[in-house]
Amino acid sequence: MANITIIKGEEFKIAVKEKITKDDLFMEQYERAAGMLDKIVRTSAETQSEKELWSWKSQDFENNIIAFCGERGEGKSSVMIAFVNALYQDRNNEIFTKCKNLINTNFAEPIVIDPSLFDGVHNVLDIVLAKLFRKFYECYNNDHQHAEERTRENLLDRFQRVYRYVSLINNQKQMLDDELTMKGISAS
Image (tube, rainbow, N blue to C red; front, side, top):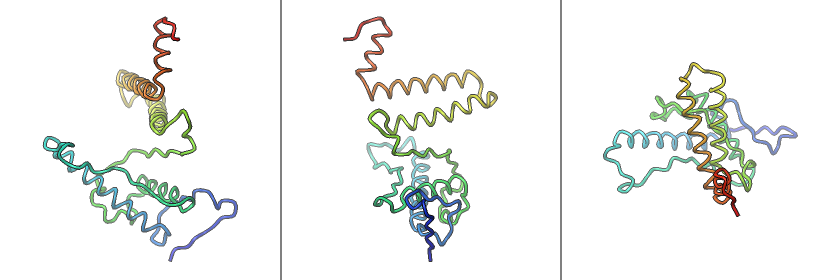
């Protein structure tokens, strides 16, 4: 039977456990998410191996999103973050025992997005790009041996281009005004 521990002053905060155990209240949700992820990885591997034969026009595309749904305060964020931590740091956890497709699969460090960061200016794509760039910039400054300078500069240039295109999508009028100003033309 699952135990519930409530800590005074932290009743409404996300509760992330260091290790998922079999007596966890959300064990069923962890196992379902692990099964979904295993299916996503299997489908992705099958699609890659049949790349020349596969066409998005002729087949349904398997979704690659795992949604944690529930009412406010039911533990969605706690379950999601605990699951992601287990996937990234504790792949031997029992929730993954039936997941044969995850054995030889490596995952990048997760990007966790706080919904409170969304506002009238920033959307999920902006935030993901910013987090990816921050990670790249940390690696860029800390390890100059990992990739040659030309490769790093090329990646930096691509980040700038992607950011520019995303900005254009988000605010076309402002981008056009900036373009015209850079060319010395007055925008009115």
